[in-house]
Length: 507
Image 1 (cartoon, rainbow, N blue to C red):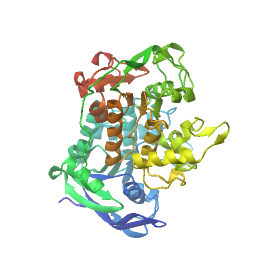
Image 2: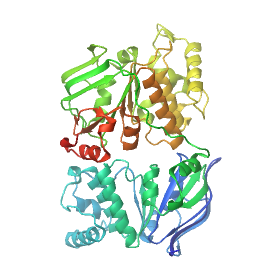
Image 3: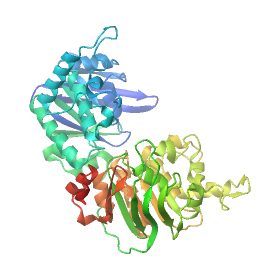
Image 4: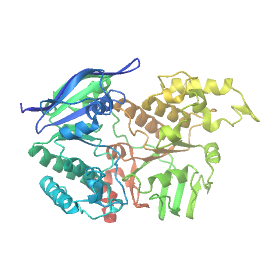
């Protein structure tokens, strides 16, 4: 085996009674890609935060290139050659690529910037690792893949020899992901070592040399990637076999529930719709693929009554759709919002109030201004039981729930009306974002079951595997425009990737 460039020995970290990392020992070799897997709450983020100096371990120590790494000191980690590329980019849109990369590398008291030297160094690093960039381009004008390239260059410019990549393909098109994988190959060929954090098991098996799996704060498995399967990795992560969602086409497609004809919305930031037409039919899942920020949020807000159309026509069950969330709930529109923490629940309110929050004024739960507490609590209990929401009692604040259980609560609220009426239209925006594989499978199965019960389902997802697994028809959104929604088997991954990048002929 090649020389170890990183050693973690007996790392333990507690937060009160919670043991986030329990005596974890790992090593990373020169020129190796080590995939770090685990469910939400398994301890991955804590372990990486200790390595990068954001947390101090309660026990254990770290060596980088044979030297002890001072704990709790991000500057020491950077100086030792450890770099990190976060899932959410930390770039200034109004500055150039060069300025973003140089920022923080020169003393504040220095009266001038050595731009010529910095430009030459950036050119050398980008050439060496095949990361072409335009140094003078504004970051705000770059695509997502180019921005990620800048983030990687920031770390390499600072001398990183160990690179931590956190969900690096989460917002990339398939073509951009392929380009990233080629770049990683060049990096390891030149001796860089990489810790690759991802929930996409097929990517993990393709990119990594070795896999380490955490569960409940403990290291439960290590294996060579060539000797592992996706099913085995999933079982190690959750502790039991996982039956992942298999594609099952819709059997009974009905009439249109909701139709958009030539719809445009006002721009809010980068989010807008531009002449969008779409038909959502009962008993069918229409999946929308695309890089986040291209209008998907505007589409979800429009159909949930939170954003009006400025032109075009939107109808629900044949009548004009009102920009009124309360009215849409009464019409059987269920929503699963993109941000479960900021929009999906009110964290400080108890679980039972969150379970009925969208229908609290209905006759089933209130009389005039008075809430009949027994009825909503009884309904909340049914939601919790039916959707297997664990980890907090009805009176506990919703923020005490894990991400997966919070999403189950939101699903239950959306799909279980007090009178038992199934939803007519479900708008599910990133419904499995950030969930572990067990929770992902559960959420996907519930959406398929709702479709089979007759609901029209709009699935908006950045995960192309999810789009292809669940979508009966698939459309792609780019810069506010939507391709035709074609049967899923008429798309290839390559065609979807081209459409995600704006190649309209791909459809």
